[in-house]
Image 1: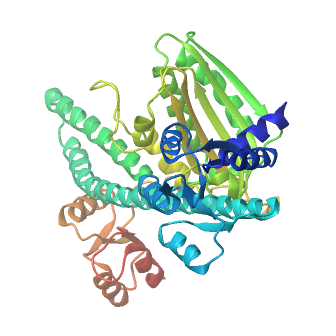
Image 2: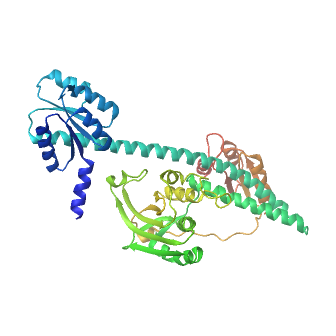
Image 3: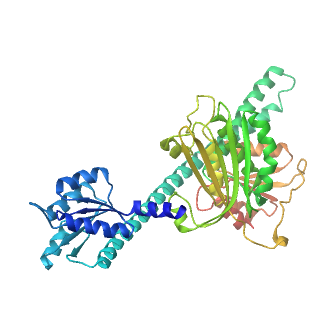
Length: 473
C-alpha cells in the first residue's frame, strides 16, 4: 500500500499537459507517458489547453507547432506569460534550425522532432523535471537565507536595545539599593523603595528575555540526558497545568546526550507547556516526544533554517485552538502575541527560539487552526569526548566585604560607572575608573596594584571588554 501511495505522489509532482490537435498521436503519447509514471492530461486545441491550465497545474507542456488554424509557437509565448514557471517543449515535424531557434525565442525550454523514440521523449522530460527540482531547491535556499538574515537583523537590534536598557536598569537598581541602606525605620519609604526594586527586577527579567532572543545571554552548557530531564519535569508539569490537561511522554529509543544550558532548557520546555495549556482552555492533551534524528540535506529543504546533522528532537504537541500560517510565521518575533493585554508579554517563544539558536539548534513550529500546534526543538548531539575531559562548573564561595583590594571599573556611561563605584566602595574595595579600553590600559600600565578588572563588554574605541581583558593579562 505504501509503495502505491509513493508512486501516486511521484506522478502527482510530474504533471504533463499534451497540447496537440492530432487526437491519435496525443492519446498514444498520453498512454506511453502514463506507463512511465507521469500524470498526463490532453488538450486538442488552444481553447481546451487554456481551460486545462485553470484546473490542471501542469509542470511541463508538450505543444505541437501547429494547432489547427492556430500557431503553437504563438501559444507557447502566451503560456509563458500566463504561467512563468511552466516549461514548454515544442513538438515539430519540421526539421530545420530556424524552427528550433524560433521556438526557443518564443520561450520554449526545448524541442523534439516528430517522430521520436519514446526514450528521447522521456529523457527530455527528465531534464525538465530535474531543472524544476533544482530551481525549487534554489528558491527554498534563497528564502531560508532571507529569513535567516531577517532574524539575525532583528536579533541584533533587540540585543542592542536590551543592552542599553540593562545599563539604565543597572543605575536604577544600584541607586535604589544604596538609598535602601539609608532609609532606617521609615516604613512608608521602605515600601516605596521595595516596589521600585520589584519593578526594576521585572524589567531586568524582560531584558534577559530580549537578550535570549538576540542570542546574547550567558549560557552554561553541560552534558544532559534529555530523557531523564523530561521525566523529572513531568511531575512539575502535572502540578502546573492541572487536571484538565492529559500529559503524554513518548520517547523513541535511547537518546544521545546534548550539551546545553540545563536551566534554560527546563525554562524553555516549561514555557512551551504553559503556552500549550493556554491554547487548550477546555482541556486537552499535551504530548512530549523525544527522539534522535539525523537530518540529511533533503530533509532540510522543506523548513527554513534547518541544517543537516545529528540532533535530539524534542516535540511539544497540543490539541488546542491552533494558529493560522501567518500567525505561526510571526510567533517568535519579540512582543508578538494574540493574547489579551496583561495575559502575556509576547516573549516566551522568542526566548525559546533564541536559546535554541544560540545552542546551535533549530526551532520549528507547525500549527493548524482547530487541530493544535507542534513546536519541535532540534538540539545538536554532544561531541563524543572522554569523560575525564568533562568538568563541572566550579562554584566559588561568596566572599564577604573587601579588605582594600583595588578594582578597575571600565564603563563609558557615567551613571553606571558612578553607581558601580559607590556600591564597590561600600563593600570595602578601592575603586579606580576608566571610560574606555585605552584609558584602562594606561591605568594598568601605571598602577601595578590592580587586583580585579570590572569591565563592560561594549566600549567605545577599538578595544571592547573582551579584548581589554586579553590585553590586561
